[in-house]
Every structure is written in C-alpha cells, then in structure tokens.
Amino acid sequence: MFVKHLTLIDFRNHKNTEIEFQPGVNLLVGPNGHGKTNVIEAIEYVSTLNSHRVASYQPLIHKAANSAIIRAKVSHETRDVLVDLELHRDNQNQVRINQPPIPRLRDLLGTLNSVVFAPEDIDIVKRDPSNRRKFIDQLLIQFSPRLSGVISDYERVLKQRNTLLKTARSTGAKGSSLSTLDAWDESLVKFGSEIVVERLLLLDRIKPYLSDAYQAIAVTNNEPNILMKSSLLGSVVVDDFEEAELEYLELTDVDRIAELYRGKLAIVRSKEMERGITLIGPHRDDLVLLLGDLPAKGYASHGESWSYALALRLASARLLRDESKTGDPIVILDDVFAELDAGRRDRLASLVADNEQVIITAAVSEDVPTSLKATVFEVSEGSVTRV
Ligand SMILES: Nc1ncnc2c1ncn2[C@@H]1O[C@H](COP(=O)(O)OP(=O)(O)OP(=O)(O)O)[C@@H](O)[C@H]1O
Ligand SMILES: [Mg+2]
Image 1 (cartoon, rainbow, N blue to C red):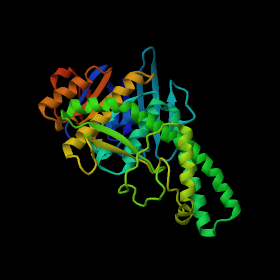
Image 2: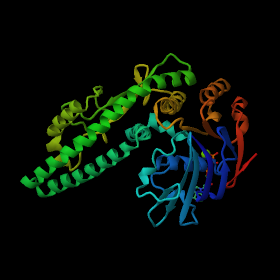
Image 3: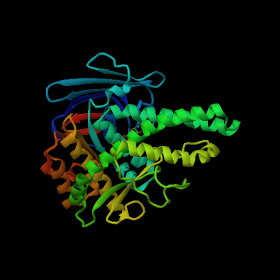
C-alpha cells in the first residue's frame, strides 16, 4: 500500500497542506522546526491512532484552532481508500472511511499500515519497560487489529479491579467484595493470557528479521535477541521489577499461561489487597533486548542502542511485509540519515529501497544517498511543495 495524497488542515503548524506522494521513495527536506516530522506524525496517527511524540492528541491541533483534519488517500492493490479523520479539542473525534462515518475510531486500524522510525525510538532500548510494551503491542495491533480490542478490554478490567482492590483496602475485605474480585480475576486472566501469548509468538517471528537488520546496520558479531521477562513467573512479588532477577517466559500455550497466571494471582492476593493495585500481568512485563549476552539497556553504547532501535523498526517492516495480509507497510524514517556514516547510509538505503513506499525526512538532502532516487518535497514554515 502507499499514501497517494495527504491533506492537513490545522494539523500542528500545517494550516493547509496538500501533498501528492509518490510510490517509491519520498523525501521531505527543510530546516529545523518547519514541519517535516509533523507530516510524518499525521500519517502515523492515521495508521495507529497514536503519536510517538505525545500521549494525547490535543497538541496535534493547531494552537489557534479548535479542530484539525487529516485526510489521506491510501492506495491498496485493487482500490483506493479515503480516510478522513477529524480531531476536535472539545468534542469526540470522528473518522470516515470512504465517506460514511465509522462508529468506533479503532475500526480505522489496519487501513494504513506504517512503520515509523524516529529519533525518540532510542527510548525503546534505553528507557523504562512501558516503551517496550508499547512497541510490541503496536506491532501486534498492526498484524491483527482485533487485538486492540483485547488490549482495551484488559485495560478496562485492570482499572476496575484496581478500584475494587482499593475499596477492599479501605473497607477491609468482605465476602462479597472477595467474590467480585474472583470474577474480575477470570476476565483479567482471559484477556491478559491472550496478550502474553500473542506477544511471545510475535517475538519468535520477529527475531530472525531483527538479527538480519541489526547486522546490516551495525556490522558486528553481536547477535541481538529478545526475551520476555514476565511477572507471571516466580513465587514472590518483586517491588522493583527492573532490578529483579531475570525470569524469562518462553512457553506459548495459552492454557498453561492462564494456569501460571491464576497461580501467581493467588500468591500475590494479600499483597495486592495491601497495596490496592494489580501487581502482575502483561502491564508489568518487560522485553529484555539482548546484545550478545548482555541486555542492551545499561550496557550498549549510544550508537549500538540507536542501531538496535532502528533494527527493531526495520525488522517490523520486513515482517509485516512478508506476513501481513495488507501488503507492504509504508516505511517512514525521520531524521535518520544524518546520524549515519556514508557506509551505513548506503546499507540502510539498500535495505529500504525496494519497499512500495518510503518517506524520509532530512534537514539537508545531501545526507540522503542519491541511490534512493527520491521524489523531493520542500517543507517550509508549515507548507510543502514538490521540488
Ligand atoms: N499545535 C501546534 N500549533 C502550531 N504549531 C505547532 C504545533 N505543534 C507544533 N508546532 C510547531 O511545529 C514546529 C515543529 O515542527 P516539526 O517537529 O515537524 O519540525 P521538523 O521540520 O521536523 O524539525 P527538525 O528538523 O528539527 O526535526 C515547531 O515550530 C512547533 O512550534
Ligand atoms: Mg523533525
């Protein structure tokens, strides 16, 4: 698939921008702060209903406006799909696909698949577990948008269960609240186990691609590998999960995982009542990104971490391309080439060149290898013109 046309109205600093993208490589060039990443963010938002820069959509709306519009014409193999997404400061956001409004925003997921690499992605390697959970869950949803429902069901149950635990803490556990807790536990285990299994299966599939991508960019003998550190394992509750002794979950049988889950819930029940919070489950798990024998977090150099993050995205793109039903994802590289030496630039270029569509940003076009033969757009003060 590829984006044919993008319209931005009052999106970030784009008052009214029209871009006629081409299949193949598209390059957005312009000085710092003129609106290149904003364009990418708009495509990312249509793709995932998420931005890598902010947690809520409010900052996406132009500071002097009350709503923003992103309109994207997406070309699939046999048809074009027109997505019209309206973001409102004070109202419900709305999305139309080929005109009729769709009731739930999340039904948009799967219409436009993209993989974005942005400088902030180094956080996946270096920072707290929530960055890694977000990485894997977003990729899961791209493979099967249905899982977005499972993840929000899990989050809903988690919230309600936490409320119940807090009430039980303040009023003392009584028979009725305990049986309600048991009922919530079953839903927690049902949705939670599915998330855990899906994450593990996806990790297995992405590993070979990760290895290839990392070798191509970094050229080392250090093999990357990913393991899942799971809160469902072990017999004690750990306070600081990050520092806790490593226990990796590898089995992918959903019934056995559910069994482990129930067992561990029983172990932590009294601690959970004491604290008023759910202590185990996929919201507490972490991916351990290994480089050779050591976790990249805490050991890898800045350059290694950066290459690792890029490799995670490139591997995602390859995997989606080979296995997803929706065809090639759009590969988006924000400010990547400036970080690389000439050899690595060329290798990265050849890794992404044959994708159906690639969108690249750079402050200066000289940083981008000419072998990419890009269609070039100039971004200046929130407007975009084809060069
Ligand atoms: N809601 C908003 N309303 C108006 N302007 C905004 C809004 N959000 C961001 N901006 C402006 O957009 C500009 C940043 O745009 P963007 O991040 O796309 O720059 P860029 O071209 O990618 O720059 P760099 O090369 O430094 O990465 C900033 O000047 C910022 O003030
Ligand atoms: Mg930028």
